[in-house]
Image 1 (cartoon, rainbow, N blue to C red):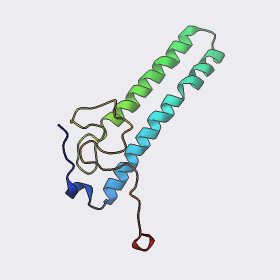
Image 2: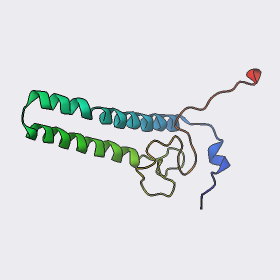
Image 3: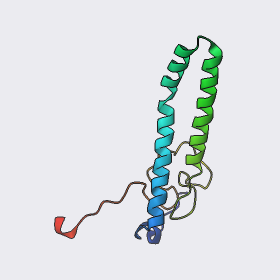
Image 4: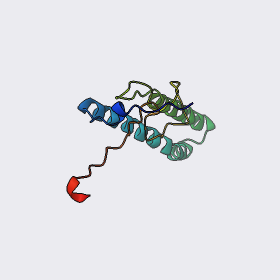
Length: 121
């Protein structure tokens, strides 16, 4: 059964701490994507630099440890608004929701809210 998002949490204004924490989660997400994008070039450089398979295995091992650490940091990121795991809807860490744009618990968005001025409506 899906929990309803609390209107009191969803509609209130952002504090400076919440904005900074949202930026930290976005930064960790960019770090994960950047690390994932380095696999091909890292293996290519290792293959060109050394003609042995041990160098490739070493680079692959370091890359695997790095991607696991980056994913772990993102999996255990806490929502600045409700304090629960941001990428989880049931309280347990989730790999499948690492790129969710909202908190699974309170619905807070990662991207800044759009400001719609009354004069533009």
